[in-house]
Length: 311
Image (cartoon, rainbow, N blue to C red):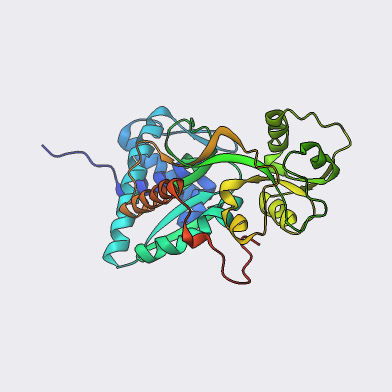
């Protein structure tokens, strides 16, 4: 008995349209007209005798049957892409999404180790603040910050979150370790996406500052940490991301009163999705890096003479 098999060109069109959630964007990616995309989807729906999309005025939404088909088909096409790359002896591309600060302060100083071990893997490191939506992107792996309880993903912890004030050793009148109130005489540096850090730390040490605090706010933690290095004030530091600055003496911890929360950085990937061997190599490598550094610092973090990390 012959097995039924859907027509491949409509199936490919469906995979792109389902990933883009738009016939217009699918047409742009495939280099055809929107009408051609619609016709190909119609052919596939005729084959399955089932509706794959709900067509709305400005968007298309997968039906339950369409979602199931997309989960299976997207994995199949990904495997075909990997196989094609290997046949043509091209490096397989691995897409990783992370935060700008984590990329600059933690990942980048370690990437030369990965590149040396796995020269045939091409990494594309993308940065974003919003959590990754694996259903809307071809990103395979992400590094996210939180409790690790995101739906529909597999998550493995990497770097724990410990925060405490940090400043330049050249800051005027550095507060003494036992004089926490002296902190309030300085400009406090903060970043847009870590706005709760100071509040949580104040609660941790039992300090109730008034409205007299002076703030200097930045868009990103990268800029906030650099402002601390430049002695513009005292920042709330994520100490795991500032190892190089502590080693070089660019930053110090005046109070040594860290707050360790139940939040941390996790490496995540879609639950149930088949990953390329190259993506698995990156996952295994970064987990091993994080695990080893819990037992001792990495010498790769020591900056070269005259080098400023993360500027």
